[in-house]
Amino acid sequence: MSGPGEPILFVNGQILSVGFTALAGVPIVKRGDDLLSIVLTALERSDEQLRDGDILVIAQKIVSKAEGRLVSLADVTPSSRAEKLALEVNKDPRLVELILQESTEVVRARRDVLVVAHRLGFVLANAGIDQSNIEHGHTGDMALLLPSDPDATCEALCAALKTHTGTDVAVIINDSHGRAFRNGVVGVALGVSGLTALTNLRGTLDLFSRSLRHTEVGTADEIASAASLLMGQGAEGRPIVLARGLPASRSKGRASDLVRAKELDLFRTPAPRWPSAGDINLLLGQRSIRCYSDEHIPDQLLEEVIRAATYAPSAHNRQPWRFAIIKTAGAKSRLAQAMGDRLRIDRTSDGDPPMIIDADVARSIRRITNSPVGIVVCMTMEDMDHYVDAARASAEHQMAVQSTAMAMQNLLLAAHALELGASILCAPLFCPDTVRASLELPSQWEPQSLITLGWPDVPGKLFQRRALADVVRVIND
Image (tube, rainbow, N blue to C red; front, side):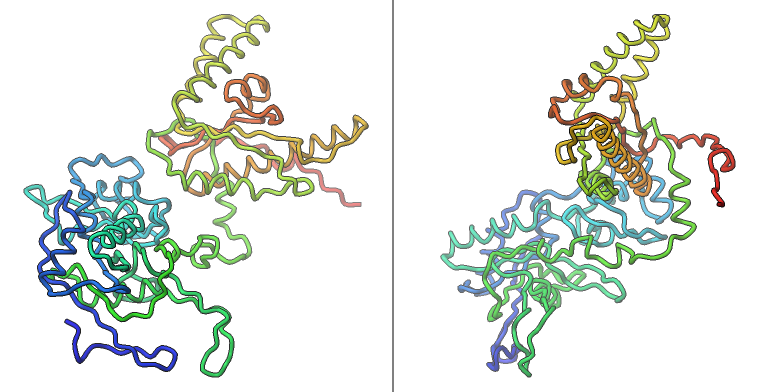
């Protein structure tokens, strides 16, 4: 309880008293329990009344339980990718499957360690999935996932507390995370509402009137960490802490403000360096993959692949590439059938045997419909230069085609680097109008290829390459 010995804070030369109180009487929370009722009851049992400016810090675990985020591993079927990774990290394949479903990227993996980028943006071990302090029942195999949207939960609870108590308070959902380069876990904010999560001190003055240039304070994390000291990590049973007297700004902050963008992360994005043998092997190891598992590709992973494509060089930096992403069964079937019908017409006019045509059409339809994702790569002349003479106009068109081809290569290599499989079909070049009509693409988009994408079900085949002597001519004079 806060009292005469409570901590003090110096702010602008003034001494402020700060109190942290672990609320009493919080029951074991179960699926569907009302967090508002739990908080109000705990306040009453602790003989506390909310005041404007108070901050409630709530342990992630009771929020996840109330939201029904408890999963039985018996109901989880691990994918082939999860089973392979589970062997590497020495974990239950079913748990690894849950981790992958909750994540967008595997950041580090080794025996007993699996660090991922959670779909909420946090980089943490095991996607925050925990098996401690939960009811396991007779199976002994339960796992608790992080809340679906912690910021939204905090916002809703703030509004409910305002309605029931008439006070303006802030809410933080905290959790315990490990830290790179440091031992031990500390409390961090998973969800925030009612206060500034990230305080920008740039432009303010220090004690010697020097303007701060880079300082940002993870205010919500600091409060979450302080509350964790009272909550404990074991059987303490103190999941709600009332913080009072903190001089935090009351803006509309969110925990997502605390997540550093990946492109600014120096530790996940290596600094520029000379290529290594591993880099070359990435190029040499890329294969065409035509057989995929039915495992879902996270949207953020798909976005990474497309972003890599857009970093290709292009003529005049006009970036003439365009991408149509196909994920639904209906769209894939519609495109496959339209292209199959056009293939049948063309092959029939060539005089090919009907049996051969039927087999080729069926194979084409299977390749499109059996892939988890299809990407139609198109090119447009909208932003390219325009010439009145045919020769330069043709060269400009060819420059746009070359630029788009480089984007396609980037896309294929990015997929391979992320352990996805991909295969490129150039068939859209033979029926661009059919592809455009099937997918209702803009008339300016010129289809160049269809790239199928998914998690590999079987490894790709290595084809023999021509000897360098056959394809290289060195000019010495």
